[in-house]
Amino acid sequence: MGFFFSGYNFTTILGFIILVAVLVLLNEVSRKSKILSIIMYILIPAVMFTLIALGIVGSPSSKTWFGTVKAVSALLGVLGFMLIRYTKVEHTKFAAYFPVAILGINILEAVYRDVEVFMNYKALTVDEAGLTLLGGYWNLFNAAAGVLLLLTMTGWVGIRVAKTPSKDMVWPDQVWFWIVAYDIWNAAYCYNCISTRAMYSGIALLVSCTVAEAFLKRGVWLQHRAQTLAIFALFSLVVDYASLPAFSITATYNPAAWGTLSIAAFVVNLAVFIYMILQIKKTKKNPYTKELYTNLTSYKKNMKANNLI
Image (tube, rainbow, N blue to C red; front, side):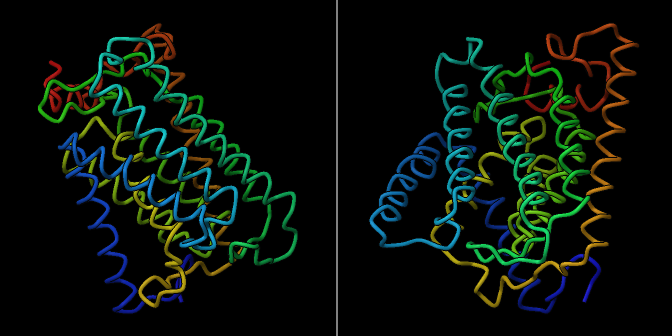
């Protein structure tokens, strides 16, 4: 048994690797094809939600408000990004406001859930979705980290479409250290609030979009994140994957582990916030009306990778 997770064996490790690989692959092929994007993010979800509504399919996640909201919000994000990428919406204020709004709403949902778990689960409890939960100080640390994450979403006014065949939605100011801060925060959130499935709903998803950003197409992390989240959210609504032997890595439900991860998320996000303040003082820029990190190498690489220089 590890500090954060237990249940490691050949089958579960292979299952994790295959899940990440499938998410990366589906994200990549849909990213490069408008037709495949329409099939994957419009037609297939329409069929799935119809079957769920009729009671023909459905996992425990489909019976909770949070599982459904997450799937719908992820899909709305992808559809909004498709409008920006493939229509004249690219040249309107929607192209800047929608991405930051959908990301902010998703973060706020998670902050709310952390506080909700803190208030309502005073003892180790299995909820209606089969998740083992325990509220504690860790929820408050991670909720605070989420608020800092919201404040450090800089340069969204510079969101634009790549001058490449795939026409990706680029957020150049969303540089590597913000992504790392998000990853740690989201891992902590999943560990706090989706503990039983945190290895998959949290770690696997974060690895998939971060791998796509680092090795396949940089500067479009939010697009990678939305697409991989939408794919997995739909999968989780129709398949009770937690009951499968290949997906049985679970949290240790150790308060020390909960606390360690959430405090780390808070510290890292506080560091990013402080760095942002220092950059504001140095550049005299308003990070909510201008791009802040244009002088950084990572920003310039984001622009170059999308033929925007």
